[in-house]
Image 1 (cartoon, rainbow, N blue to C red):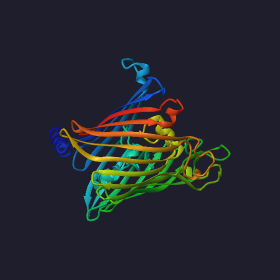
Image 2 (tube, one colour):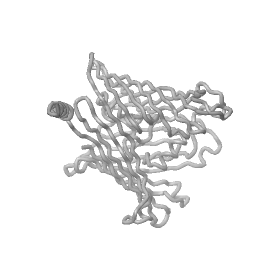
Image 3 (tube, helix red, strand yellow):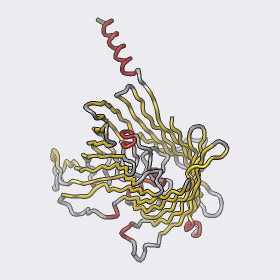
Image 4 (tube, helix red, strand yellow):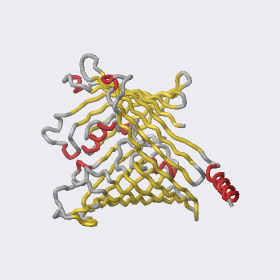
Length: 409
């Protein structure tokens, strides 16, 4: 009997792991921030991430990603123990099977999973190249600034059509880290529908659904088994009209995380300040590119990005950016690109505040030259930020230098 069991285990193991394959992406970056406008007093912060996919067979794979960010190493000393933030961004398992002319994908996850903005969903299902904005670049994983974050513990099911470049999905998750949405930190159950499609002149990845906070106390503060008296509608979308080879195209990323549609407490109403959008017309002149971006980011997302380091460029809640760059140049057997961001941002202001008397009070004008160079199978990114307003007012953070390296393997 033991011999038979060993033989069965051996055959199953061979079948399961015969196609084992690992692929992934890693990134490491150093950010220097001068804490004085005049004189040298730098802060040095390291950040990085490692993410990958282990295909155990043709049908089953495991995905994971973690990131780390240190405190100021220049002040604390590189050789000493330094405080750092470690995050397990994603751990998931995916089963894929083709049946009846469609590809079925079932995923169980914890952490982030294919948020709107990461473009993981449309890349994994339809093989679309990344088309995100340069404004949302991050070295703490693929989940940078997101129009809507799929986060928590849950599962998803999707079907991808063979004869049409489209995919449909359902996501159900429970998010227990919910302090910003509910005063009593009640866990929230989310149910979302998802759709993605990719044609020659239109690429779209969108999600919409409802969230229900699961309260265990009623309005009289009495314990109950379960109380649902509020529903939140949320949505997010990545849209590219045209393609990366078009002379003109339009990128739109938009969404909001909660719109109350039924509730007894009127203390929280939906505001345009809580709407996320990046509206970015793109123009191509040979190898030269010009992108003009207008963005509006909710205050909560900006505060989170500052703490965690999710964004290298967007630091204000509303602003505009003109990106001028040469996409592909060749020198000394290496491809590279170079350009500049010309940014105008407004702290703690939003789209609906245009015209207010104090709208210009916290305006920042920034010039950010950058370059990207191929090296050792990856890409080195260098970004220098000069905040002209902070420099003129002798405020800290007028100059920043970011050097990063990303590689797929």
